Length: 394
Ligand SMILES: [Zn+2]
View: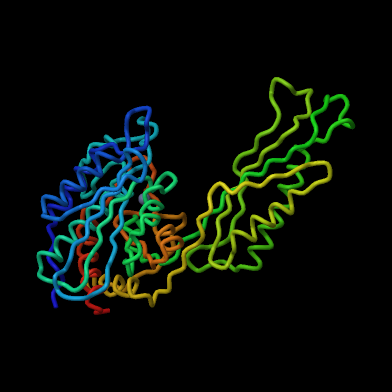
């Protein structure tokens, strides 16, 4: 069976149109993802779909369309993309207009070209291509969610609204350089507040210095990282567990003669399957216990690692599609950070796999780009993956 024909010019032009919308979350400049979501909604309506818009937060829409195959009973596949992008940052580091959507040298340039407006466009055009190719079993839920780059309120809202309940598998269109990523690293961000006793720098014996406790804690955290790395050997796609102190706050430059009462340390923990976040947070709390110091550990972000087996239907269908469209064996990889797929799998209980056009490392950088040919190729893979997943042909 020949692979499904897709509208190559259409998907590229739609990616350009999305990139030209500066959908950064930047209230000060009056910007968020809403205009990009509206463009997605309009395209869905143009095709006769019936998208539903959910407000994940005021003015922060999730756009969801269910496309019935009309070919009898079958599973539900979810395609997921996010409409927000990170800030363009310092314009002087760009050699192209970050929101120009320019195509040059076979590349489509701009903020979000890779992460992930091309992937989002590919999910829409793949679904449209499959629909035009004739009836198929089951249905496809095409989802353009808000705020992936922030607190993932779009994905969390999607799950709490019960929209994962009927989904059998999700393909998340983040840029992974053509790798099939069924695993993703976990992220645990902790804040440790150590409260001692303020005192004059000349009379430290009357105080309890939390800065010295932070020093001891940093040493202990390095030992904990070594212990965890020993206990959880490097994952083939995700590498090591890391405990990285990222922010340290204590005292005041204007008060060099004062021992401060409080010191705060922020820690970014990156985990692999098997490393339990609750255990790690408990260990950090135990290490933060010092005489004369009261310690409080707060969990700021808790996104567990994702580990979907490659034998899962959604991964197997995607791998078969990749093989059929590209003629190449799929390369399996891991997502270094977390994605909306983390939320869908951990809280929504559905298997997810991440795959999409664009390089893994180009996201969030200046002069972000995606190869035009990769957008079209990925659209073909998505259409074929959907057909195979829904008809059980993998
Ligand atoms: Zn992304």
